[in-house]
Length: 81
Image (cartoon, rainbow, N blue to C red; front, side):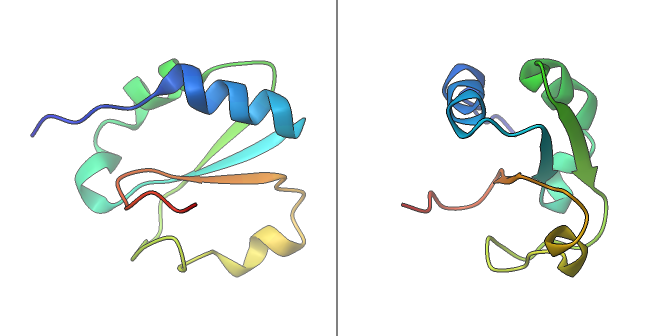
């Protein structure tokens, strides 16, 4: 399956938000590509990948509220404006 990820746009949003700890959520179909995605998103911040289930942008892991995660990126879902 082919997909496009706007790494440049995502990195600009991360920079604009001044996030230091970024959590990336991927649906099961993209989890196998996490190394490529990690390389594309690499920057001056810490990247974390959620390995648990992810059923969409409303499925946010509860630990993020108390763990210092500044920004969550959901890939493979409809754009949320």
